[in-house]
Structure formats: C-alpha cells, structure tokens
Amino acid sequence: MQSTPSGAKLLRKLGLAAVGAIVAGDMLGSGIFFTPGQLASIATKHWQVYFIWALAGGITLCGALTLAELTSKIPESGSSFYIIREAYGPFWGFVKIWTEMLIGGPASVAGVAIIFGQFFMALPASGAVTSPSIVGVFAILFFAIINLMGVQWGGRTQIALTSIKIAALLGLVFGSILLAAPTQSAQINDPSINAAGIFGMLQVIGLGVSAVVFTYDGWIDVTHTAGEVSKPERNLPLGLTIGVGTIIVLYLLVNYAFLRVVPLEQMRTAPTLVASAVATKTFGPVGGNILTGLIIISIFGALGGLIMTIPRLFFGAAAQYKIAIRKDHPAQFFVRWLSRVSSKTSVPVGSILFSAAMSIIALLSFRSFGRLANFLVVPLQFINILLVSSIFRLRTKNTHGEGFRTPAFPVVPLIYIAVMAIFLVSAIYFNPVDTLLGIAIMCAAIPVYFWINKKESKGER
Image 1 (cartoon, rainbow, N blue to C red):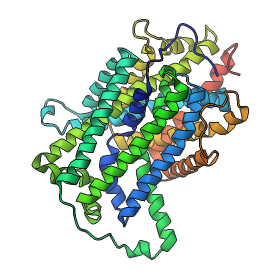
Image 2 (image 1 turned 135 degrees about the horizontal axis):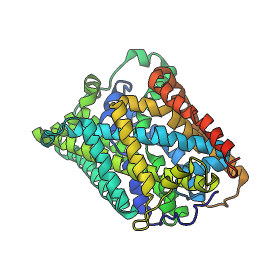
Image 3 (image 1 turned 45 degrees about the vertical axis):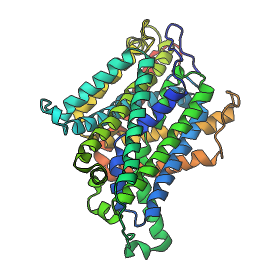
Image 4 (image 1 turned 120 degrees about the vertical axis):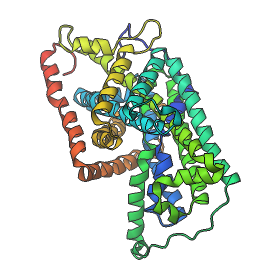
C-alpha cells in the first residue's frame, strides 16, 4: 500500500454513525419510489416481490461484506484505487481512477442532480427556475461549498439528511398501515409464466433482480472516505453492514406497505404512480405533495453523499501520483492541485472543486438521466467487479494481517461477481450507443497511462 505523502493529511473524524449514514444515504435515492411499479410488470405473486427485493439486497450485501474486508485492511482515502492497484498492479489502478474521474464520478453526480432538478421543478415555489439542469447545477454547488467547510460538516449533513429521509419514508410506511384501508385482491394469474414451471420462475427472478438491483447502488462510495474514518478496522465493516442491512429492511417494509394499499394488478397498469397512490390513500389530497417532498429529500441526501465521497477518491489517487511522477512532468501540476488539502479545514479542496466542475459539465452535456446511466453503467460495473475480485489476490498475498474476514468466502464475492458480470453483458447488448461511448473513454486510459509511464523517471513501472 502506498501511503499518503506528508503535508497532505486528512483527519480521521468520521465515526460509525457517519459511515452508516453515508452508506444508507447514498443508496436511498428515488429508485424505491418507482421500482416497485416496474417489478409489478414482472412478478405475479406477492411472495415473488419480497423474494426478489431480498435476493437483490443479499447480492448487494455480498459485495459490501467483501469490500468491508478489503477497505478495513487498506483504509486510505480513495481506498478502492489502492485496493485495485495493489491487487492487479499500477496499470489497472490507473484505469480505475481514470474511469472514475471522467465517467463514474461526474455521471453519477450529474444523474442524481438532474433527477433532483426534475422533481424540484414540480414544486409551486420553483416558478422562477427555467430548467432542471439549472437546479441541478445549484445543488452541486451547494454541497461542494458544504464539503469545503470541513469533513465534519459533510458528515453531519449526511447524518441529518439520512435520518430525515428514513424517518419520512417510515412515516409513509406506517402511516399507510395505520390510516389506509388494505385492499383485497387476488394474486395475478399469468398462464404464460405459470405454465413454464421452473424456467418461468427463473425468468421472473432474472428480470426482477435486473429491475431491482441498481436501486441498492451507492454502497461502495463510503470507501472513498476511508482515510477520514476513525477506527477504520471496526467502523468500516460495521458501517457497511449496518447501512446495507438497514436499506434491505427498509425496502422490504416499503414494498409491504405498497402491496397492502395498491393491488399488484393496479401496479401493473400504472407503474409510475404506485407511490403517489399510496400517499394519496394515506394522507388524502395533500398526499401527492408529501410524496414529492419525500422524494426530493431522498434525492438531495443521495446527491450530498456522492459529492462528499467522490472527491476523496480523486485525492487518494492524486496523492499517490504526486510522488510517483517526476517533478517536471506535465501531469505534475494537475495531480498536485488534486492532492491539495486546505490548511484551515483539512479537506481535499482541489479534488472537491474538480469533481464539482466535471459533474456540472456532464450534467449540461447529457441533460438526461437515462443517457447518463447508459454512459456510466458498463465502465463502473466493470471496475466494481475488478474491485470485489481483488480479495482473491490480496488474500493470497496476506500482507495486511487478519482483521475482518468476509464470511462464507469464496462464495460471497463470487455471487456478486457472477451477477454483475451478467448485467454488464446485458447493458452492452440493450443500450449500445451511450454505453460504447463510456467504454471508449475508459479505453482511452491505455495510451495516457503509457504516455505517463514513458515520460517518468521513477515510480509506476
């Protein structure tokens, strides 16, 4: 593991509560409000809904438990970069950070920001705002300023926002149980699926998990802040487990509340209006406004988590390249700027500003969540597979002692790798245009890496 150079120190001020809040906050966005309706077009029985959500959560937990071991052993800022670099060598470490800086990081932030802007425009007070993109830009700038004030400000903001949105979502869940009358509806009887027997069931599970699994996305982001987590060998594994576990339970509760109030066959006919129907039946005419506010808070919190965590990944890699690239190399100015830490607030100011700028550029370039998602999904999932698979190489090296151990190894990491590999192939097949653009930008890392390697006199060879 390469240590952070002296003079570029971040402070370990994030405790277990902040780690858990970042994990849960980044995962809990807008997907839970719309995915249940999408799943209704696939599932035919209530138990299938619960099974698919639990299965997708279990797959996510497999990845989280694997990464918990890796990150607790290499608790650096941008630890995922260091993990891949140590497991597979400097070339793949460079591909990782190149992909995150130009694709994964900016597109993730921009995608959440554009959704936030779209829902914000639905509020009565948004009359003077001209477009969702403008709202998204201001939201990015807001969180960038919060994080420039110090890591404690960012951590406290995430704890507050995550607490508010979980409490509000639970309010909708238990409000619907107490205030809305349950529906009496038969399960959907789809002969085309029932007649297919075990193969039909496998089809339901495959399509259902594909629809649900990315609603759980975001759990990896907390590892970028590993260099600022106190007692990382304890708080990172525990925070990842608590955060992911909380979201699994919460999603199952939400689906129970939705199915109790809105029949499965009604979900099929109006999949995007399921959450709205639940809110209206629970709280009456004001239910729609309550739901919109809840969605906005959820998306806002997820955006804040991304803007807090992603710059730490850039900082961690830049701090390493700062000592690996010779001082007169053209790239030296850029990595020095990215690895700059404020003497007053002890935050990576250069990386925060770079991340905000790249996210705004991505937002104004694509202006569509769908295009942004297609652009980032293959490169990002490829890197995630590489990251989780690192456990096999690092366990062989065994250079970091015992500490936290992934349970049921090697089954747990293999489950995550296999499922994500299937989704990676399907994404290329079904969305080739923007997907191939993201792949092309990722592949551009190859000549850049060898250009840097050829020019330098020491370091990454």
